Amino acid sequence: MTHSLVCPETVSRVSSVLNRNTRQFGKKHLFDQNEETCWNSDQGPSQWVILEFPQRVRVSQLQIQFQGGFSSRRGHLEGSQGNEALSKIVDFYPEDNNSLQISFLGLWGGWSVPLKTVGW
Image (cartoon, rainbow, N blue to C red; front, side):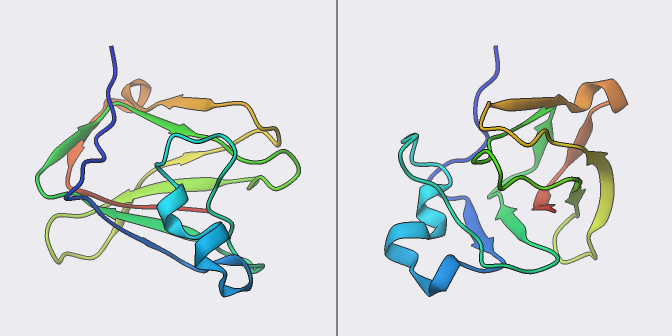
């Protein structure tokens, strides 16, 4: 059984917010468990989400959901320890639909790092 690593102490940052409208499209909607809301980024070649966990985490899978028609073609998971530079852990290739998509990172051996970012 899996559980979310995101807790109240997890710090999140995003690359942009559509029309700077944080009330309707802000990062607070990333983890609100409401399928009627979502974080919407502004347009641009690269969008990202950074998660800074209060403790070391072991990531075994990544669950991500896009709005159909607004998906990334490629993403990558990066991690670091403390203030070290981020390094790529694995690439993932989401489908362009609104289904919950799960990448089993354990297929790549799993990672035990202080996860910092998911970028696409």
